[in-house]
Every structure is written in structure tokens, then in C-alpha cells.
Image 1: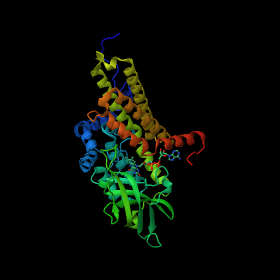
Image 2 (image 1 turned 90 degrees about the horizontal axis):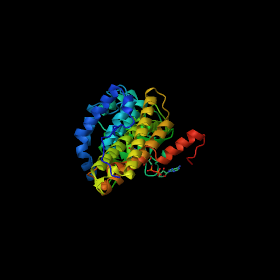
Image 3 (image 1 turned 135 degrees about the horizontal axis):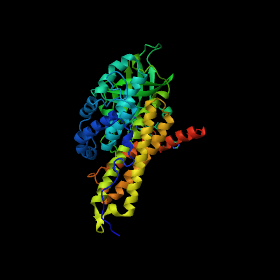
Length: 400
Ligand code: FAD
């Protein structure tokens, strides 16, 4: 029987009432990022996506920097020193606009800046972190190669000393692939094999022999700069090496930071898609009534609300653990695995509610859905995080 709709009794954007767990400061950070998105990103981002380019990545970086969002959970050197939870909330809001915008921010803060902040020399920190925090300088992070993705230990990029002592220059040769921010970066943190294992290098992109051609033809993360890095006999002073870390622990520690942001960010894309579908369902009529009144539509919306609420609760829980210093990398894997997978499911289901409109960039859903295909793969694929979790649960490694 057709019944008229009444006013909803739950806040659809927070059906489980999770907001009550946030402090006033956390809500204030969230509100300021949401305002930035509403004013400066949301009206334009579908167009950037359609054209396949960020209109003004430098301007955007400066805007994010002026709000203290770049390297926001790091202390000192011009960084805002906010909490992990505040960082997560900012990621959620930015990714509710577009995963590409959150990628710009998290590659800058959690990959490039974190690498220098955690493993760099005092000179490297002084030279780069203040300008990266303000957005004057953009950073990228080069780990993946054409033949080394999930298995970065097989990387071919090589750094060798041009001499026999520790003051000798380094010469870097190799290629990195799928590097976010690459073509607009001022500085690249590049990981390379050396005689002493994997080491990180702080490479000014003005160095002779360095180039960063854009990668075209992407159907995902189109409002994000993605590039190849080519290192052709790039000569760097001895001081360019990150002195405090050796081996894959270096890049993996940075990835762990960025993945934490994805645990939150993916729920932003999910929220945007779910709320779009909910609004559409209440406005779109078929068979003489809003499609929101059909049980099959309500099942989709209820599932979205449940998975969104669970994902945000998980992100918040992991944020609280990170803020007290007990968060383990395997728990970040658990969060990334669940939240990106569920966010993608929410987007796919939302797309069906929009019918044919679901494939149009007039609505954000297909954009989020396509973006999340990248987010599912980068910073460790679903399969890699499954194996990380599998090993943590069983004690057996199944990677090879
Ligand atoms: P592969 O490693 O070749 O994997 C292919 C498939 O095989 C996957 O499904 C994978 O899970 C599976 N697989 C591999 N090994 C196993 C196994 N042992 N068991 C089971 N399944 C397995 N990288 C950077 O360094 N910096 C960046 O800024 C960056 N930005 C990116 C931006 C975008 C838009 C994209 C798409 C990627 C970006 N990446 C970046 C690269 C990303 O991290 C890699 O794509 C990712 O690590 C996977 O590597 P791959 O694509 O080579 O896939």
C-alpha cells in the first residue's frame, strides 16, 4: 500500500549519532574544511575531473597550507601539530569532495613531508618542511615502478656513490610510475636501492636529469596529477640521502601514515554518494510515488547507512588509538581494507538508485566510484592488506 512519507527521525548524515564522540575542536576543524570544500572545490571539481586536470594545483596547495592542513598532524617546522583524529576528519571532508583532492593533501603531508620529518636530517627538515607546510612547495613520493608495485623490494631504481667515502655525491638512475603530484612537485622523495639496501633521497625536481611526464588516459582520480618520474643520472650531494632509515621500513612507515588518512577519506566519498542517493530517492518518482518508498530502495539506503556508520566508527576508533600512540600497522590495514571496500560498495549501490543519472557527472557518484578504484589499489591493494591481516592473525606469511 502506498503511504505518504513523514519527516525522517534520524540525521541521515550521522544515523548512529557518532558526532557525540567528537570534541568541539574536532568539530571546528571539520567545519572549516567543509567550508573550504563547499566554497572552493565542490562547484568546480566535476569540471576538473571531466577535463582530466586540476585547474590550479599550486593555488589549491597554498589554500590547504594556509589552513594548516598540509602535514597537519606533524609537530614543528611550520606544521600545525593537530591530532590524528583531526587529520582524519579533514581527510573525510576533502574526499567527500573528491579523492584526488584528498590525495594531493595526503601525499604531501603523510608521504613526502612525513618521510622528511621522520627520517630526514635537520638541514633537510629546515629546508623543506616550512615551505611544504605552507603549500609554497609541493612534494611527491616515488616508490612504485613500472615493474615493482606490491613488491617494492624488487625496485630497480639505483643510487650509487660517485666515490668511495661518505661525502661522495650520489647518482640516481631509474623510473617511478603512478606518482601523485609528480609533474607539479618541487621536491620528490625517491626510494632507491643502494649497496647498503633501500635508501630514501630528497630530490629537488630542478635537478639535471630529473623529469616527470604526466600520465594521461586515466578514468579515475582525474582531478589529480599522476606522473612518471624519470631519473637519468641525477647527481645529488651526499646530504640528499635521508640519514635516519635504511630498508623498506622507511617507505612502509610513510605509507602507514597515508593509509590511515584513507581509512577516513574513503568514508567521505561514501557519505557523498549515500546522501546523494538518499536525496535523489526522495525526489525521483516512478509508479506514482518517490522511489524512496520502495522496499528495495530502502534496503540499499539502510545498508549504506549501516556500512557508513560502521566505517566512521572504525576510523574514529583507529584515530583514538593513533592519538594515544598504540595503533599498529596491521590495524591500519584492517581499516583500509574494510573502509575502501565498503565505500566502493556504497558508491555502486548509490549509482543504481540514480538510474541513468548515475552515470552522469552532474552527480558526484560515478566520479567517487571511479576514484575509489584507484584508492582500492594504491597504498596497498585489497589483496596486500588481506595478506597483512592474514599474517597478523595466523602467523603465516602468504605473500610469496
Ligand atoms: P601489482 O603489484 O602488479 O598487482 C596487480 C594485482 O596482483 C593486484 O590485484 C595485486 O593485489 C595482485 N597481487 C600482487 N602480488 C600478490 C600476491 N602476493 N598475492 C595475491 N595477489 C597479489 N605509488 C607511489 O609510489 N607514489 C604515489 O604517489 C602513487 N600514487 C598513485 C596514484 C594512482 C592514481 C594510482 C592508481 C597508483 C598510485 N601509486 C603510487 C601506485 C600504487 O601504490 C600501486 O599501483 C600499487 O602499489 C599496486 O601496484 P601495481 O599497480 O604495480 O599492481
